[in-house]
Length: 152
Image 1 (cartoon, rainbow, N blue to C red):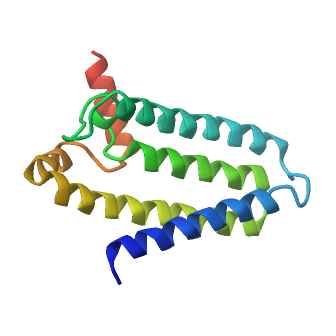
Image 2 (image 1 turned 90 degrees about the vertical axis):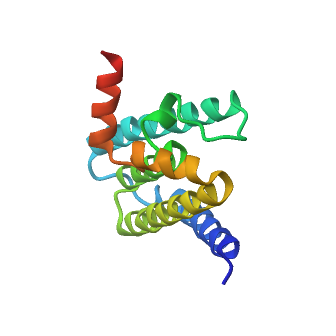
């Protein structure tokens, strides 16, 4: 199967997971209200990461590897932001269907992230390979340490 077809299937599964989460998040009131607050915090962090990555790409011409802003810390901040936002759904829904659907969605995002690496290697060549060596895919601990070091 062609790589592009696999990516499209993953995107459809991701969309179905989102619909499942929306449909089943409120089938019963959440058992632990404090977890809903945690969910909002997680959703905010994911949305911020996603928005920062969109702003960075919007202000740049994408004919070369972008390694500034949030892309200098995390290689795929948009995918990671989406994964974090999906994670918040488990805290909102607090039921097995939402948790399973969230796990499927996060898995799809991860596979799409791996596919994006290959697409970028094909597009940018050695420049992207060097970028991959400098910037982690999504290691949060390493990314936070790099951020703190850059802030000094």
